[in-house]
Length: 497
Image (cartoon, rainbow, N blue to C red; front, side):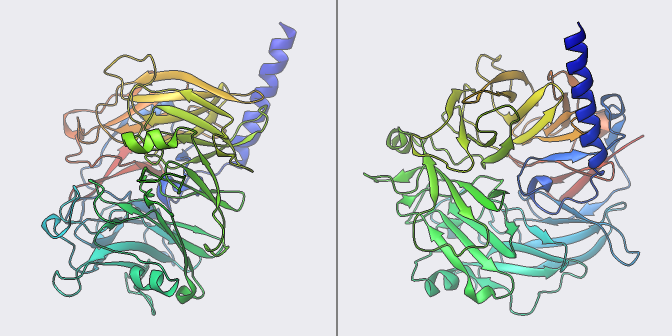
Protein backbone atom coordinates (compact mmCIF):
# COMPACT_ATOMS: atom_id res chain seq x y z
CA UNK A 1 0.00 0.00 0.00
CA UNK A 2 2.82 2.40 0.83
CA UNK A 3 4.47 1.74 -2.54
CA UNK A 4 1.22 2.41 -4.38
CA UNK A 5 0.62 5.59 -2.37
CA UNK A 6 4.16 6.74 -3.10
CA UNK A 7 3.75 6.14 -6.81
CA UNK A 8 0.43 7.99 -6.79
CA UNK A 9 2.01 10.95 -5.00
CA UNK A 10 4.88 11.03 -7.48
CA UNK A 11 2.47 10.88 -10.45
CA UNK A 12 0.34 13.61 -8.90
CA UNK A 13 3.39 15.81 -8.26
CA UNK A 14 4.59 15.32 -11.83
CA UNK A 15 1.18 16.22 -13.21
CA UNK A 16 1.03 19.35 -11.05
CA UNK A 17 4.52 20.30 -12.20
CA UNK A 18 3.50 20.03 -15.86
CA UNK A 19 0.23 21.85 -15.24
CA UNK A 20 2.07 24.75 -13.63
CA UNK A 21 4.21 25.10 -16.76
CA UNK A 22 1.26 25.01 -19.16
CA UNK A 23 -0.49 28.27 -19.98
CA UNK A 24 -4.12 28.40 -21.13
CA UNK A 25 -4.46 28.16 -24.90
CA UNK A 26 -4.84 31.65 -26.36
CA UNK A 27 -3.87 30.95 -29.98
CA UNK A 28 -4.23 28.27 -32.67
CA UNK A 29 -1.84 29.39 -35.39
CA UNK A 30 -1.65 26.13 -37.33
CA UNK A 31 -3.41 22.82 -37.75
CA UNK A 32 -4.14 21.19 -34.38
CA UNK A 33 -2.58 24.22 -32.73
CA UNK A 34 0.96 22.87 -32.55
CA UNK A 35 3.83 21.83 -34.88
CA UNK A 36 3.58 18.27 -33.55
CA UNK A 37 -0.09 18.14 -34.68
CA UNK A 38 -0.93 16.68 -31.25
CA UNK A 39 -4.16 18.67 -31.10
CA UNK A 40 -4.05 19.39 -27.34
CA UNK A 41 -5.51 22.64 -25.94
CA UNK A 42 -5.32 23.79 -22.32
CA UNK A 43 -8.12 25.48 -20.37
CA UNK A 44 -7.86 25.25 -16.54
CA UNK A 45 -11.60 25.83 -16.22
CA UNK A 46 -12.71 23.23 -18.75
CA UNK A 47 -13.38 20.28 -16.47
CA UNK A 48 -15.56 17.40 -17.58
CA UNK A 49 -18.36 18.80 -15.46
CA UNK A 50 -17.97 22.26 -17.01
CA UNK A 51 -18.06 20.79 -20.52
CA UNK A 52 -21.76 20.04 -20.12
CA UNK A 53 -22.44 23.79 -20.19
CA UNK A 54 -21.30 24.32 -23.79
CA UNK A 55 -23.78 25.52 -26.40
CA UNK A 56 -23.65 27.35 -29.71
CA UNK A 57 -23.30 31.10 -29.32
CA UNK A 58 -26.28 32.51 -31.24
CA UNK A 59 -24.69 35.97 -31.33
CA UNK A 60 -21.55 34.73 -33.13
CA UNK A 61 -22.08 35.32 -36.86
CA UNK A 62 -19.00 34.54 -38.99
CA UNK A 63 -20.08 34.01 -42.59
CA UNK A 64 -17.84 32.89 -45.44
CA UNK A 65 -19.13 31.69 -48.83
CA UNK A 66 -18.25 28.14 -49.78
CA UNK A 67 -17.36 24.76 -48.33
CA UNK A 68 -14.79 24.88 -45.52
CA UNK A 69 -12.33 21.97 -45.44
CA UNK A 70 -9.43 23.89 -43.86
CA UNK A 71 -9.41 24.13 -40.07
CA UNK A 72 -10.04 27.66 -38.73
CA UNK A 73 -7.19 29.43 -36.91
CA UNK A 74 -7.18 31.78 -33.89
CA UNK A 75 -4.73 34.65 -33.37
CA UNK A 76 -4.54 37.23 -30.55
CA UNK A 77 -5.23 40.82 -31.57
CA UNK A 78 -2.74 43.67 -31.43
CA UNK A 79 -2.85 47.26 -30.18
CA UNK A 80 -6.12 46.73 -28.39
CA UNK A 81 -7.79 45.17 -31.42
CA UNK A 82 -9.99 42.08 -31.24
CA UNK A 83 -8.69 38.53 -31.31
CA UNK A 84 -9.14 36.98 -34.75
CA UNK A 85 -10.62 33.77 -36.09
CA UNK A 86 -9.37 33.14 -39.63
CA UNK A 87 -11.06 30.85 -42.14
CA UNK A 88 -10.69 29.97 -45.83
CA UNK A 89 -13.09 28.24 -48.22
CA UNK A 90 -13.12 26.28 -51.46
CA UNK A 91 -14.36 29.40 -53.23
CA UNK A 92 -10.96 30.98 -52.52
CA UNK A 93 -12.54 33.29 -49.99
CA UNK A 94 -10.48 34.14 -46.90
CA UNK A 95 -11.64 36.23 -43.94
CA UNK A 96 -10.66 37.26 -40.43
CA UNK A 97 -13.48 37.59 -37.90
CA UNK A 98 -13.78 39.16 -34.48
CA UNK A 99 -13.39 36.11 -32.21
CA UNK A 100 -16.23 37.24 -29.93
CA UNK A 101 -18.87 38.55 -32.31
CA UNK A 102 -17.99 36.94 -35.63
CA UNK A 103 -18.02 40.32 -37.36
CA UNK A 104 -15.74 40.38 -40.41
CA UNK A 105 -12.56 42.42 -39.89
CA UNK A 106 -11.45 41.86 -43.49
CA UNK A 107 -12.21 39.66 -46.49
CA UNK A 108 -10.09 38.67 -49.46
CA UNK A 109 -10.82 36.76 -52.69
CA UNK A 110 -7.75 34.97 -54.01
CA UNK A 111 -9.00 34.34 -57.54
CA UNK A 112 -11.48 32.10 -59.29
CA UNK A 113 -11.59 28.52 -57.92
CA UNK A 114 -11.60 25.56 -60.30
CA UNK A 115 -14.86 23.78 -61.06
CA UNK A 116 -14.78 19.98 -60.78
CA UNK A 117 -15.78 19.73 -64.47
CA UNK A 118 -12.48 21.42 -65.40
CA UNK A 119 -10.37 18.83 -63.57
CA UNK A 120 -9.58 15.25 -64.68
CA UNK A 121 -10.88 13.83 -61.37
CA UNK A 122 -11.66 14.84 -57.80
CA UNK A 123 -14.55 15.11 -55.35
CA UNK A 124 -14.49 18.77 -54.26
CA UNK A 125 -16.49 21.26 -56.32
CA UNK A 126 -15.26 23.93 -56.74
CA UNK A 127 -11.66 23.48 -55.62
CA UNK A 128 -9.89 26.42 -54.04
CA UNK A 129 -8.33 26.42 -50.57
CA UNK A 130 -8.27 22.96 -48.98
CA UNK A 131 -5.12 22.72 -46.83
CA UNK A 132 -5.16 24.47 -43.46
CA UNK A 133 -3.14 27.72 -43.56
CA UNK A 134 -0.45 28.68 -41.05
CA UNK A 135 0.22 31.98 -39.26
CA UNK A 136 3.65 33.47 -38.56
CA UNK A 137 3.09 35.42 -35.31
CA UNK A 138 6.34 37.41 -35.61
CA UNK A 139 5.40 39.08 -38.90
CA UNK A 140 1.64 38.58 -38.42
CA UNK A 141 1.39 36.91 -41.82
CA UNK A 142 -1.07 34.23 -42.97
CA UNK A 143 0.26 31.72 -45.50
CA UNK A 144 -1.98 29.48 -47.62
CA UNK A 145 -2.27 27.77 -51.00
CA UNK A 146 -5.13 28.31 -53.47
CA UNK A 147 -5.90 26.59 -56.76
CA UNK A 148 -6.90 29.34 -59.20
CA UNK A 149 -7.78 29.92 -62.86
CA UNK A 150 -6.05 33.22 -63.74
CA UNK A 151 -7.01 33.10 -67.44
CA UNK A 152 -10.61 32.00 -67.01
CA UNK A 153 -10.14 28.24 -67.11
CA UNK A 154 -7.52 27.07 -69.59
CA UNK A 155 -4.75 27.18 -67.00
CA UNK A 156 -4.85 25.91 -63.43
CA UNK A 157 -2.34 27.44 -61.04
CA UNK A 158 -1.47 26.60 -57.45
CA UNK A 159 -0.48 29.87 -55.81
CA UNK A 160 1.00 30.27 -52.34
CA UNK A 161 -0.20 33.53 -50.78
CA UNK A 162 1.14 35.61 -47.91
CA UNK A 163 -1.56 37.87 -46.45
CA UNK A 164 -1.28 40.46 -43.71
CA UNK A 165 -3.06 38.97 -40.71
CA UNK A 166 -4.57 42.30 -39.66
CA UNK A 167 -5.74 43.61 -43.02
CA UNK A 168 -5.68 40.74 -45.53
CA UNK A 169 -3.32 42.64 -47.86
CA UNK A 170 -1.11 40.54 -50.12
CA UNK A 171 2.53 40.85 -49.03
CA UNK A 172 5.00 42.19 -51.63
CA UNK A 173 6.53 39.45 -53.79
CA UNK A 174 3.60 37.08 -53.28
CA UNK A 175 1.76 34.97 -54.42
CA UNK A 176 4.19 32.35 -55.70
CA UNK A 177 3.39 30.09 -58.66
CA UNK A 178 4.16 26.59 -57.39
CA UNK A 179 4.81 25.18 -60.87
CA UNK A 180 7.35 27.97 -61.40
CA UNK A 181 9.13 27.08 -58.16
CA UNK A 182 9.33 23.46 -59.36
CA UNK A 183 10.70 24.40 -62.79
CA UNK A 184 13.56 26.32 -61.19
CA UNK A 185 14.62 23.02 -59.63
CA UNK A 186 14.23 21.01 -62.82
CA UNK A 187 10.98 19.37 -61.70
CA UNK A 188 7.67 19.03 -63.50
CA UNK A 189 4.55 20.03 -61.54
CA UNK A 190 1.11 19.79 -63.17
CA UNK A 191 -1.27 21.92 -61.10
CA UNK A 192 -4.32 20.28 -62.70
CA UNK A 193 -3.53 16.87 -61.16
CA UNK A 194 -1.88 17.99 -57.90
CA UNK A 195 -4.04 18.84 -54.89
CA UNK A 196 -2.96 20.72 -51.79
CA UNK A 197 -4.92 19.10 -48.95
CA UNK A 198 -2.33 18.78 -46.18
CA UNK A 199 -1.84 21.58 -43.65
CA UNK A 200 1.00 24.03 -44.22
CA UNK A 201 3.83 24.25 -41.67
CA UNK A 202 6.46 26.75 -40.52
CA UNK A 203 9.83 25.66 -39.14
CA UNK A 204 13.29 27.23 -38.99
CA UNK A 205 12.18 30.31 -40.96
CA UNK A 206 10.83 28.12 -43.76
CA UNK A 207 7.31 27.57 -45.06
CA UNK A 208 6.49 23.96 -45.99
CA UNK A 209 3.70 23.13 -48.46
CA UNK A 210 2.81 19.46 -49.18
CA UNK A 211 0.97 18.16 -52.26
CA UNK A 212 -0.75 14.96 -53.34
CA UNK A 213 -3.33 14.13 -56.00
CA UNK A 214 -7.11 14.34 -56.34
CA UNK A 215 -9.65 11.74 -55.31
CA UNK A 216 -9.49 9.23 -58.16
CA UNK A 217 -5.68 9.32 -58.52
CA UNK A 218 -5.64 10.70 -62.04
CA UNK A 219 -2.66 11.91 -64.04
CA UNK A 220 1.06 12.01 -63.44
CA UNK A 221 1.04 13.40 -59.92
CA UNK A 222 3.66 12.87 -57.22
CA UNK A 223 4.10 13.52 -53.55
CA UNK A 224 5.73 16.94 -53.22
CA UNK A 225 7.02 19.03 -50.34
CA UNK A 226 8.06 22.60 -51.14
CA UNK A 227 10.36 24.39 -48.69
CA UNK A 228 10.09 28.17 -49.11
CA UNK A 229 12.57 30.29 -47.11
CA UNK A 230 10.64 33.31 -45.91
CA UNK A 231 13.65 35.62 -46.31
CA UNK A 232 14.14 34.55 -49.93
CA UNK A 233 11.07 32.79 -51.37
CA UNK A 234 12.69 32.53 -54.80
CA UNK A 235 15.25 30.13 -53.28
CA UNK A 236 12.55 27.52 -52.62
CA UNK A 237 13.53 23.88 -52.96
CA UNK A 238 11.36 20.79 -53.33
CA UNK A 239 11.26 17.07 -52.68
CA UNK A 240 9.35 14.90 -55.17
CA UNK A 241 8.73 11.20 -54.68
CA UNK A 242 10.55 9.14 -57.35
CA UNK A 243 7.46 7.01 -58.00
CA UNK A 244 4.22 8.29 -59.48
CA UNK A 245 1.52 8.83 -56.87
CA UNK A 246 2.76 8.66 -53.28
CA UNK A 247 0.84 11.84 -52.45
CA UNK A 248 1.17 13.73 -49.19
CA UNK A 249 -2.51 14.35 -48.59
CA UNK A 250 -3.39 13.76 -44.91
CA UNK A 251 -5.27 16.75 -43.40
CA UNK A 252 -2.52 17.27 -40.81
CA UNK A 253 0.09 17.68 -43.54
CA UNK A 254 3.57 17.89 -42.03
CA UNK A 255 4.34 17.45 -38.34
CA UNK A 256 7.47 18.69 -36.58
CA UNK A 257 9.58 17.90 -33.51
CA UNK A 258 13.26 18.20 -32.49
CA UNK A 259 14.14 20.27 -35.56
CA UNK A 260 12.73 17.65 -37.93
CA UNK A 261 9.64 17.40 -40.12
CA UNK A 262 7.65 14.26 -40.87
CA UNK A 263 5.29 13.44 -43.72
CA UNK A 264 3.29 10.33 -44.63
CA UNK A 265 2.81 9.30 -48.25
CA UNK A 266 0.08 7.40 -50.04
CA UNK A 267 0.36 4.50 -52.45
CA UNK A 268 2.48 4.76 -55.56
CA UNK A 269 1.71 3.28 -58.98
CA UNK A 270 3.73 0.77 -60.96
CA UNK A 271 6.80 0.84 -58.71
CA UNK A 272 8.88 -2.34 -58.75
CA UNK A 273 11.39 -0.94 -56.27
CA UNK A 274 10.38 1.33 -53.40
CA UNK A 275 9.96 4.88 -54.69
CA UNK A 276 8.63 6.92 -51.80
CA UNK A 277 5.14 5.46 -51.47
CA UNK A 278 3.41 4.11 -48.34
CA UNK A 279 6.02 5.74 -46.17
CA UNK A 280 6.94 8.13 -43.39
CA UNK A 281 9.58 10.62 -44.54
CA UNK A 282 11.83 12.68 -42.30
CA UNK A 283 13.36 16.03 -43.31
CA UNK A 284 15.69 18.38 -41.45
CA UNK A 285 13.93 21.68 -40.77
CA UNK A 286 15.46 24.55 -42.71
CA UNK A 287 17.63 22.33 -44.91
CA UNK A 288 17.17 22.42 -48.71
CA UNK A 289 14.95 19.62 -50.00
CA UNK A 290 17.26 18.33 -52.68
CA UNK A 291 19.82 15.64 -53.27
CA UNK A 292 19.68 12.37 -51.36
CA UNK A 293 16.41 10.71 -50.39
CA UNK A 294 15.21 11.58 -46.88
CA UNK A 295 15.32 9.21 -43.94
CA UNK A 296 12.25 7.03 -44.27
CA UNK A 297 10.16 4.10 -43.13
CA UNK A 298 7.92 1.88 -45.24
CA UNK A 299 6.20 -1.40 -44.29
CA UNK A 300 7.85 -4.50 -45.73
CA UNK A 301 4.64 -5.20 -47.68
CA UNK A 302 4.59 -1.74 -49.29
CA UNK A 303 4.02 -3.22 -52.76
CA UNK A 304 0.96 -5.12 -51.54
CA UNK A 305 -0.33 -1.90 -49.94
CA UNK A 306 0.32 -0.07 -53.24
CA UNK A 307 -1.70 -2.56 -55.23
CA UNK A 308 -4.61 -2.50 -52.77
CA UNK A 309 -4.74 1.29 -52.35
CA UNK A 310 -4.24 0.64 -48.63
CA UNK A 311 -1.73 3.37 -48.05
CA UNK A 312 0.02 4.87 -45.07
CA UNK A 313 -0.75 8.45 -46.04
CA UNK A 314 -4.24 9.03 -44.62
CA UNK A 315 -3.00 10.44 -41.30
CA UNK A 316 -0.05 12.74 -40.58
CA UNK A 317 2.69 11.11 -38.47
CA UNK A 318 2.59 12.09 -34.79
CA UNK A 319 5.83 12.69 -32.85
CA UNK A 320 5.15 11.34 -29.34
CA UNK A 321 7.36 11.11 -26.24
CA UNK A 322 6.74 7.93 -24.23
CA UNK A 323 8.57 7.91 -20.87
CA UNK A 324 9.82 4.46 -19.91
CA UNK A 325 10.03 3.22 -23.49
CA UNK A 326 13.21 2.33 -25.36
CA UNK A 327 13.47 4.41 -27.43
CA UNK A 328 11.22 7.03 -25.81
CA UNK A 329 11.06 9.50 -28.72
CA UNK A 330 8.66 7.97 -31.19
CA UNK A 331 6.72 8.65 -34.34
CA UNK A 332 3.26 7.07 -34.49
CA UNK A 333 1.95 6.41 -38.01
CA UNK A 334 -1.58 5.15 -38.59
CA UNK A 335 -2.23 3.27 -41.82
CA UNK A 336 -5.29 2.58 -43.92
CA UNK A 337 -4.42 -1.06 -43.17
CA UNK A 338 -5.66 -0.46 -39.60
CA UNK A 339 -2.19 -0.69 -38.03
CA UNK A 340 -0.33 1.65 -35.71
CA UNK A 341 3.35 1.74 -36.67
CA UNK A 342 5.66 2.83 -33.84
CA UNK A 343 8.93 4.24 -35.18
CA UNK A 344 12.19 5.48 -33.71
CA UNK A 345 12.10 9.25 -34.26
CA UNK A 346 15.91 9.48 -34.56
CA UNK A 347 16.14 6.76 -37.23
CA UNK A 348 12.93 5.71 -38.95
CA UNK A 349 14.32 2.33 -39.94
CA UNK A 350 13.90 2.05 -43.72
CA UNK A 351 11.74 -0.63 -45.33
CA UNK A 352 10.37 -2.96 -42.64
CA UNK A 353 12.21 -1.11 -39.86
CA UNK A 354 9.39 -0.35 -37.43
CA UNK A 355 9.67 -0.88 -33.68
CA UNK A 356 6.16 -2.34 -33.68
CA UNK A 357 3.21 -2.74 -36.06
CA UNK A 358 0.03 -3.26 -34.06
CA UNK A 359 -3.43 -3.94 -35.58
CA UNK A 360 -5.63 -1.33 -33.87
CA UNK A 361 -8.59 -0.78 -36.22
CA UNK A 362 -11.08 -2.81 -38.20
CA UNK A 363 -11.48 -0.21 -40.93
CA UNK A 364 -9.45 2.42 -42.78
CA UNK A 365 -7.79 5.10 -40.65
CA UNK A 366 -8.07 8.45 -42.48
CA UNK A 367 -8.16 11.59 -40.34
CA UNK A 368 -6.12 14.01 -38.27
CA UNK A 369 -5.31 12.03 -35.12
CA UNK A 370 -4.57 13.57 -31.71
CA UNK A 371 -1.97 12.54 -29.10
CA UNK A 372 -2.22 13.28 -25.37
CA UNK A 373 -0.94 12.11 -22.00
CA UNK A 374 -2.78 11.81 -18.69
CA UNK A 375 -1.82 10.39 -15.31
CA UNK A 376 -3.03 7.01 -16.61
CA UNK A 377 -1.07 6.83 -19.83
CA UNK A 378 -0.20 8.19 -23.27
CA UNK A 379 -2.91 7.95 -25.92
CA UNK A 380 -3.55 8.51 -29.61
CA UNK A 381 -7.17 9.16 -30.62
CA UNK A 382 -8.39 8.74 -34.19
CA UNK A 383 -11.55 8.52 -36.22
CA UNK A 384 -12.29 4.86 -36.97
CA UNK A 385 -13.58 1.58 -35.55
CA UNK A 386 -11.04 0.17 -33.12
CA UNK A 387 -10.00 -3.47 -33.20
CA UNK A 388 -12.64 -5.52 -31.42
CA UNK A 389 -14.93 -2.50 -30.92
CA UNK A 390 -18.66 -2.51 -31.73
CA UNK A 391 -19.52 -1.90 -35.36
CA UNK A 392 -21.14 1.47 -34.57
CA UNK A 393 -17.96 2.78 -32.91
CA UNK A 394 -16.26 5.43 -35.06
CA UNK A 395 -13.83 7.01 -32.58
CA UNK A 396 -10.96 5.10 -30.97
CA UNK A 397 -8.16 5.79 -28.52
CA UNK A 398 -5.12 3.55 -28.33
CA UNK A 399 -2.78 3.54 -25.36
CA UNK A 400 0.95 3.39 -25.99
CA UNK A 401 2.64 0.84 -23.76
CA UNK A 402 6.25 1.53 -22.66
CA UNK A 403 8.73 -1.25 -23.26
CA UNK A 404 11.76 -2.23 -25.28
CA UNK A 405 10.34 -1.95 -27.85
CA UNK A 406 7.11 -0.09 -27.03
CA UNK A 407 3.76 -1.31 -28.30
CA UNK A 408 0.10 -0.23 -28.28
CA UNK A 409 -3.38 -1.50 -27.51
CA UNK A 410 -6.95 -0.25 -27.90
CA UNK A 411 -7.93 1.66 -24.75
CA UNK A 412 -11.52 2.65 -25.59
CA UNK A 413 -13.91 3.31 -28.42
CA UNK A 414 -17.00 5.48 -28.76
CA UNK A 415 -19.53 6.76 -31.26
CA UNK A 416 -19.08 10.29 -32.57
CA UNK A 417 -21.64 9.97 -35.35
CA UNK A 418 -19.57 11.11 -38.32
CA UNK A 419 -16.19 11.66 -39.97
CA UNK A 420 -14.63 14.49 -37.95
CA UNK A 421 -11.09 14.46 -36.57
CA UNK A 422 -10.48 14.70 -32.81
CA UNK A 423 -8.85 17.34 -30.66
CA UNK A 424 -8.17 17.17 -26.92
CA UNK A 425 -8.65 19.63 -24.08
CA UNK A 426 -7.10 19.37 -20.61
CA UNK A 427 -7.01 21.56 -17.52
CA UNK A 428 -3.20 21.27 -17.64
CA UNK A 429 -0.80 18.38 -17.20
CA UNK A 430 -3.28 16.02 -18.83
CA UNK A 431 -5.86 16.60 -16.14
CA UNK A 432 -9.57 16.23 -17.02
CA UNK A 433 -8.67 15.22 -20.58
CA UNK A 434 -11.61 15.41 -23.00
CA UNK A 435 -11.48 14.14 -26.58
CA UNK A 436 -13.71 16.33 -28.77
CA UNK A 437 -14.85 15.59 -32.30
CA UNK A 438 -17.64 16.51 -34.70
CA UNK A 439 -20.05 14.14 -36.41
CA UNK A 440 -18.99 15.59 -39.76
CA UNK A 441 -21.13 14.45 -42.70
CA UNK A 442 -23.19 12.61 -40.08
CA UNK A 443 -25.13 14.05 -37.15
CA UNK A 444 -23.24 17.39 -37.54
CA UNK A 445 -22.88 17.83 -33.76
CA UNK A 446 -20.02 18.38 -31.35
CA UNK A 447 -19.20 15.46 -29.05
CA UNK A 448 -16.88 15.09 -26.05
CA UNK A 449 -15.50 11.95 -24.37
CA UNK A 450 -13.49 11.21 -21.25
CA UNK A 451 -9.90 10.90 -22.48
CA UNK A 452 -9.14 7.94 -20.17
CA UNK A 453 -12.31 5.89 -20.52
CA UNK A 454 -14.27 7.13 -23.56
CA UNK A 455 -17.33 7.84 -21.41
CA UNK A 456 -19.60 10.48 -22.91
CA UNK A 457 -18.93 13.95 -21.49
CA UNK A 458 -20.79 16.12 -24.02
CA UNK A 459 -23.56 14.50 -26.05
CA UNK A 460 -24.08 17.02 -28.83
CA UNK A 461 -25.98 19.70 -26.96
CA UNK A 462 -29.61 20.68 -27.34
CA UNK A 463 -31.96 21.33 -30.27
CA UNK A 464 -30.22 24.58 -31.17
CA UNK A 465 -26.67 23.18 -31.18
CA UNK A 466 -26.59 21.40 -34.56
CA UNK A 467 -23.80 22.84 -36.71
CA UNK A 468 -25.08 22.50 -40.25
CA UNK A 469 -22.83 20.98 -42.93
CA UNK A 470 -19.37 20.04 -41.63
CA UNK A 471 -16.86 18.52 -44.04
CA UNK A 472 -15.02 15.28 -43.29
CA UNK A 473 -11.79 15.43 -41.29
CA UNK A 474 -12.67 18.87 -39.86
CA UNK A 475 -11.21 19.43 -36.36
CA UNK A 476 -12.59 21.80 -33.72
CA UNK A 477 -10.20 24.24 -32.04
CA UNK A 478 -10.26 25.85 -28.59
CA UNK A 479 -8.99 29.27 -27.52
CA UNK A 480 -9.83 31.36 -24.48
CA UNK A 481 -12.55 28.95 -23.41
CA UNK A 482 -14.47 28.93 -26.69
CA UNK A 483 -14.65 26.09 -29.21
CA UNK A 484 -14.75 26.95 -32.93
CA UNK A 485 -15.74 24.70 -35.84
CA UNK A 486 -15.44 25.39 -39.56
CA UNK A 487 -18.72 24.74 -41.39
CA UNK A 488 -19.99 25.34 -44.90
CA UNK A 489 -20.71 29.04 -45.03
CA UNK A 490 -18.38 30.11 -42.22
CA UNK A 491 -17.42 29.33 -38.64
CA UNK A 492 -19.55 28.44 -35.59
CA UNK A 493 -18.57 29.12 -31.98
CA UNK A 494 -19.48 27.33 -28.75
CA UNK A 495 -19.34 29.04 -25.38
CA UNK A 496 -20.12 27.72 -21.94
CA UNK A 497 -22.40 29.15 -19.29
